Image 1 (cartoon, chains in turn green, brown):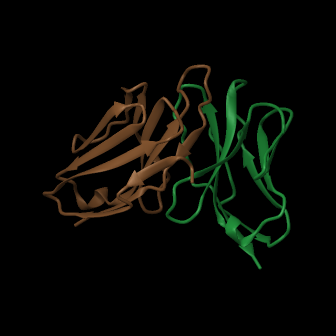
Image 2 (image 1 turned 90 degrees about the vertical axis):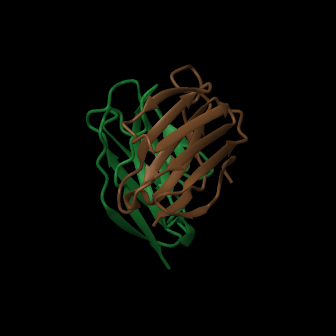
Length: 109
Length: 116
């Protein structure tokens, strides 16, 4: 499975867009990019996933570069409740979902 | 609310006790998972069940014993645990694993376990 690289921490001002980057330079053509977040001591929450195309749902947007070697999760209007650890994961079907250390996003008033 | 529930939410047990963790999913999924999250460590996959059959055991010690009586329920039986087994135990489910179904996993809130 491809490994991912994320910054360990980021800050964002409340009401502004939070852009969380992820590098997955060794991703293969049939591996999906998944994003989860984990608020302190709770179970990880699914946010969004994609294969090649950009995706948007009620929580966030996922932008995947054309070469698929990196992606960005965008929270369009961050709130204090978006403070969490965000995990970027690449997943090959029928394989394990491997969580790394993620990015600790702190949304500040 | 993700549709995956876990009980109990908190558990304190001695090293000689036997206890069980329960997970139930209300999503109609066919695959269920146990993960362990120790302090300041990434999630570690422990067991995978697909259509009630165990398909993966990631070198988990035998003092952890999973049981999947049907696609909606998953148990983790604990006996003679060690203090280093104290962690957050998370259950997840997905529609399918290794088929054409969606493999997105949905997690429960976890059971915080403390072994004394």
